[in-house]
Image 1 (cartoon, rainbow, N blue to C red):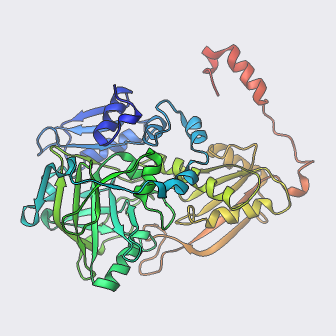
Image 2: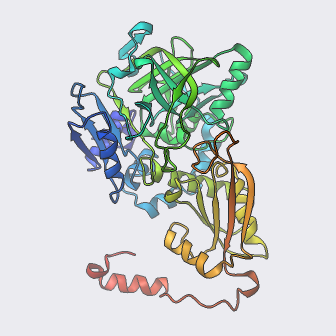
Length: 485
């Protein structure tokens, strides 16, 4: 029997997900756009299943690609080891306080170095390296090439402290499979590590895992606080250390149960033209530019490795649901830790890629409370990157419901008085509004969609049935009313 405790790698994860009826296999797709297009169709379905592509054109059976690994609540709850039967609401409740606990407990789970592991079943060195031996998709029709790194975890290290960072930075295959460009945003921890290594030694060591327990994609793709290793954070989620081997070339860690991993050095002068790429904003943004490129010196892989794909695009995309859930929990945790009273809920909406549109629900306790909540949320480290709108609502509004949030804006916001803007904040080069050759600033709005503090006692009552009455009629006629609301 496969259970949460049995998951040690992507294959164990797949076995449990398949047992739960959460996986569909698609055979015969072409690596050139068809895998990406089929995945895109799947993302738009309610609670999309995980898609496992096999018998890929030009590749032998058994060389597979997985997408939509965490595009639904049941699999995300499973990945976070919170349970195997969680719906959206139960998942959000189960995550309350968890991110803060995982950060606090991370130092208790240093990685466990092991002499070998499944990832070393095959080791390709130097001239034998060809990344196109694996079924790397061209995900979108207008992409500039084939991207092996979408669901990846790229490992860098602080040269002074030795703390290891993992980031989900996109990786495009270059030089006919002998290299891969790594597109790291300037404000990310990995970029800081690379700059520090360049200043010290003129090169920076890198390893990257390209197929693994999707938990590593979660921790690589969300903002774990600086100074905390994502591998240790993952250990705190698992309740046990992550097993790693050391790379032959750089000595950096590689998850021992990874399906496929690469290793080498970045050098400041070594760059290749990269992009365009369909990004999480829903646009081909960022253009084509020279990007730091890894000449791959080692490839480690299991027999018939499974590539973990997580292509972005117009939401909903592969990881937009996961990011929404994780960012919401992390931002709510961080907001509570500031000491702000009355935090009733936070949701980072999928329509904004889990970053650009935040809704914060509060129980108003004093004049200025709503604006304080909005300003704090807009600049928290967990929320600041690429944030554009923070909408603060009363506790009677469900922050997860875009309909309810917009209703509150339409009925409780005076555009002349209740919308404030912040300029020259932390943006991104993938922002479609960014002008070429200009710094990646952005502007964000804090929208007070709470009932006016001066009219709390006199504001019109909402015309809807009480929760108790709704519960009662739903229980009386479950076949007609759906059994829950």
